[in-house]
Length: 254
Image (cartoon, rainbow, N blue to C red):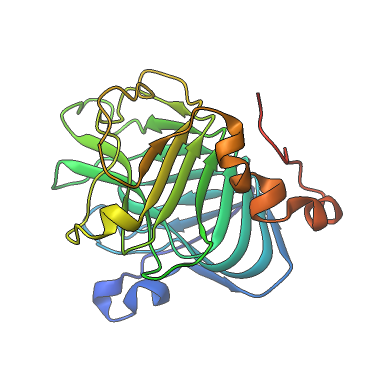
């Protein structure tokens, strides 16, 4: 997939802060990146350690690999699209307050040295904003180091602050996903303001029978309910992605 590797090992607890720990920081509009591996190799004990931070409008990341543990991919703000990428991590490893769609990506959950819970996404601006994380036709599986440890629970995400929006649609969810699906944070009020949705997912982890019963959690019955979160509508994909040359599906896969 990638021929160029950029790696470093900065962490937030070294004094850089979460954003400052990024191995690569893309802060600009109209950026296209293809075929690069971004790595933060601080390791599973490093704490918050970002591999890639993106901030700006119309940023497209294609056929790249973003590798880390906690806080791997920070989509800070703006409009972003990831296509055919690999993202790996343990805790909150896809997070931020942008409008972002990951389509046809492979998401690998890794093993923590300590702790028995992994969370893939974390989102929540703390106020009403039409932003969020959309996982579309992605594959979510355990990385090789996690596979021997089925007792470690993995959740699709959690609301970092109030008004969190996270959509998981038409994805393959492997057996590592906990039956409850989602994890709360310490602020129980956020469960009333969040909008977390699953739609037409498949795989052994996609059974929604045992999912959380939060006021803001929904199982979409049809595509009409969540058409706002397609590439066409949520990030206005047809207005800028064709000129970039990145393949995309503007609507639903099925």
